[in-house]
Amino acid sequence: MTSDDELIKRKQEHLDLCASDAVAFRETTTGFEHYSFLHYALSEVNIDEIDLSFNFFGKVIALPFYISCMTGGTDETVNINLKLARVAKELNVPLGLGSQRYALDSERFNSHFDLIREASGEVPLIGNIGAAQVVEAGIIKKLSALITNSHINALTVHLNPAQELFQKGGETNFKGLLTAIASLKKELGIPIIVKEVGSGIDEKVADELLWTGVDMIDVAGAGGTSWSGVEILRNGGDNQHDFWDWGMPTTYCIRKVNALRASYNFLLTASGGINSGMDIAKSLALGADLTASARKILRELHENGEPGVVKMVYDWFEIVKKVMFLTGSQTIEELKMDKIVKKQDMF
Ligand SMILES: Cc1cc2nc3c(=O)[nH]c(=O)nc-3n(C[C@H](O)[C@H](O)[C@H](O)COP(=O)(O)O)c2cc1C
Image 1 (cartoon, helix red, strand yellow):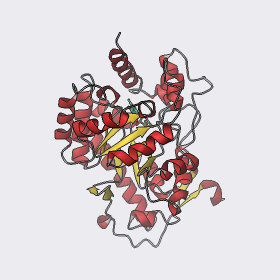
Image 2 (cartoon, rainbow, N blue to C red):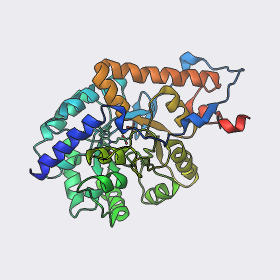
Image 3 (cartoon, rainbow, N blue to C red):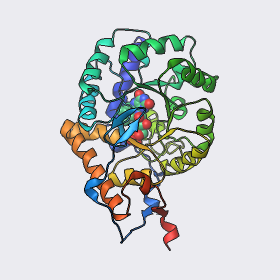
Image 4 (cartoon, protein in one colour):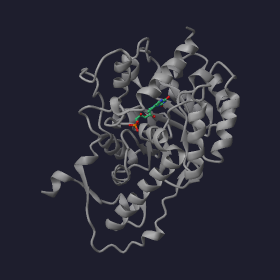
């Protein structure tokens, strides 16, 4: 099997495993269940006037939400991305592409990227590359070409050490990663986003990244999809494995990274187990600018198609509006003003 075949096979196995809940965290939760909103009986909010639109690097999007990175656009997966692209266009939210590693050394997929751009209309497209590729020699030149060829408006670097550690043949040498990310920011001329894949980013990691000028941190915390879990299953293990639940809960990551606002200007995305409107409302109240979801979107796409995903996301944001109404928050900025408490503080 060539390394390209290997990559394609792995991607397909990831998609298959993520079509069920078998890869959910077993014990670690997102932490959203520990928070409650403070009811505000004197609400003067007009729910019909709530505006959820958001300025995403100079482009107005309809909701503080994006479809998180899942598939890149190989022959086998381009159809999923075309579906997600149409959903993103309908919702007017950004679409995150999955790892584009396979396209770094080949222009063979450019026609797929043309199709994805066409299907997504004008919404921001977010490219994706792994930490293991970022540290390779000559990456800047390859990424410059990829940005043009895949029409992306921002680039995400995914940090996935736990996944690599448990993946057969995974990359376990990330020497030079921070310096490499710093040079992407200096050389590429588009917004640089750094995300995890479900083990979370806290204030220590975010501080180092933001120091290099990175534009957005997507915490991708624990409690949703376990990517060490995905690889453990692929190796024949089960969810009793010591590292199945490795990671920091999404709520912890949001709070910690949000505390860096005084020092840096950046966007903060909450993801990792965002599976409901209440999760989104709590993320925003805890300080996130944006929210994102991956596996839940994929599962809804499998079960109810593109209209199902569009409806699900709209329903989520109807819940966000109801929370805003009941907490006296006309704007998301107001929702962030002491509207949520830890449940333990209510007793
Ligand atoms: C099928 C699938 C494939 C994924 N592939 C990628 C990828 O290529 N690059 C990436 O940055 N994240 C990838 N992810 C991780 C997600 O973007 C996300 O960070 C993680 O699954 C946690 O979010 P969730 O709990 O909403 O699934 C993938 C997720 C899924 C479900």
